[in-house]
Image 1 (cartoon, rainbow, N blue to C red):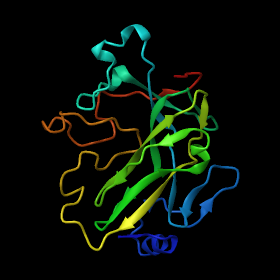
Image 2: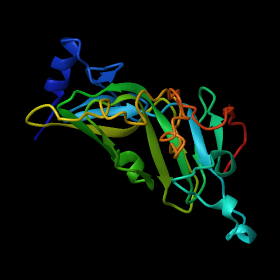
Image 3: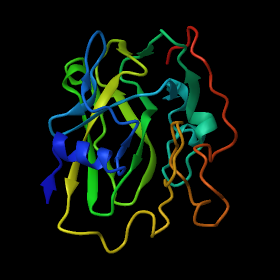
Length: 226
């Protein structure tokens, strides 16, 4: 397995097989947290929509409605959705967690897997990006998991760089791709996507539109903090 270099990613784009769309063939750095093509990867941007996890009241530690259950995720009780207006920033509260989404759309080849890693600028401020795979055959906007590990508010800048994707090419195409196995996060749209629950296996989720829980309203950020 080999890592794709900047020249490899450029060739794919020129051939009409870009993995990342839109594809920028250089790094954008002036006055922003950098994004675009890197030496051995691609720095992606976080969009303006976020799902923020609510703080749990101390007197409700044992209440089942306050639990986060990956098999039965109740987003309406656990998170609230906001859209950061142009020119504004998301101020993540201490020890808080948020879901964001990539500006870019991915079209993963059948012989390539991607791995998301954090950018050093944010890492040095205490922001941790979960390491997640982009599997062969997956298509969609990436849901980005963001954790503020500090005891201070940290600014997150929408439409600027948030993490880097490393692309590794296997010796050949996989036997079963994410698309062919009916992966439940296929074709994610530009919204943070919650964990899909057992409803998917029961055939009740329907076509994934990036909003698979009850309809969600992304309100303006205003002065909302976690």
